[in-house]
Length: 124
Image (cartoon, rainbow, N blue to C red; front, top):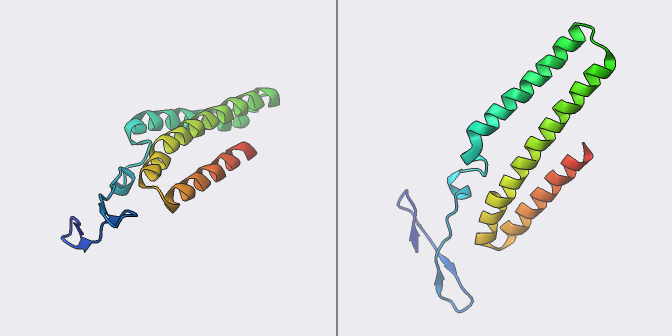
């Protein structure tokens, strides 16, 4: 039996021979996401992208030439895609890796989740 922080006892995992297997507690269990170490950098990057989007609004408001606006749209899109790829990499290194430590169905669920996210990114 394992005691939780609240004092409740939870059965430990059992291996094939019937022996107790230590419970694996990962950062993900603690509510820590893969991007937490770079959170400040990510927020700074998102604020820059937000500024690019505001710039697009100003360009339209100022009746800037269409091709110039499209050039800025492309730059903003690339910035968001780059951010998304960085976040995906951190998800794979952290969340999927944490699930792999635990094994079982959780690994399959995390891989499926990541695969769907990649699919969404590729459709953009």
